[in-house]
Image 1 (cartoon, rainbow, N blue to C red):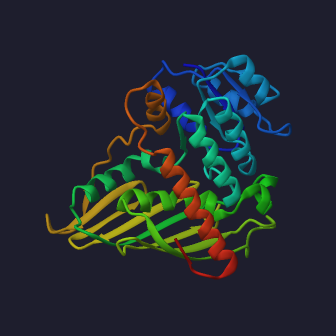
Image 2 (tube, one colour):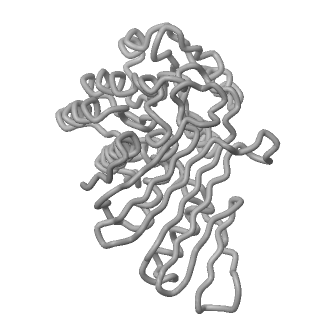
Image 3 (spheres, rainbow, N blue to C red):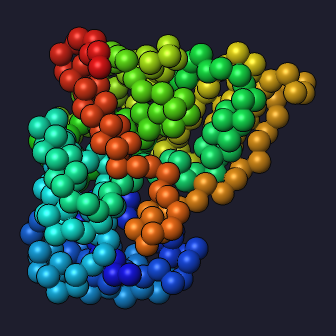
Length: 329
């Protein structure tokens, strides 16, 4: 199976993790999404796991010559929908960085191209792979905390000095679609429910001269069965922090509470006194699951329909933050 990568901005590291787990996976070529994109670091990252890739200056030339079965799209966020459209029209399976598109019109057009294509597509919502979130999800799906009432999700990152495309709404798309999409996916995954409404806020205050970049955001969702979901996003994590990100979730149900903090999952319920630590479990690898689905066996846990839905919800949440209005779906 021939695999190629377009761009250098997203989570292509998921493919590297898949290669570490399965050395039969390889990548044939890498090309930039635009002429100003430096793909050399991508090639160097693949070389570290023993994969030597061909570098192309233009992705359309790469597609013509390599004729890949799967392409990972992770260029500048605003252009990923156009690249994906080019791939779908060529009947190439797509493993795409999120968000799938940076506005609703682009998303709608992309969805129609997907329906016509007859190929597979998914997005890089990779928190499902993480062993601590997989452990928490298993406990919730086993009914160990009963019916879910409320979910609180936190994603906090070090801002540092971001690339120039982060400073423009047009090229970045916004913190809610970029960072918040992970949180929306988690809420959707844990509840198995669609959303009824969102009320959101975001701010550019304290963004360290990063132009349009929203340094913090808050979203409140209500699911179709009345679960309350709060999402807190920020780039306020100090440079001295022990890790780049601090991802947390708390899920409260009728029989107990599950929490993830510092890459560990915990449960409090009537099974035992006090807090019990859950054993981390293998959450799999999204790219490997997607590749297997393309081959005709297995199923990627995140369907194309899921990916389009999560993107749409995030774009509506951004609209809510822009307008100050609650959006109902």
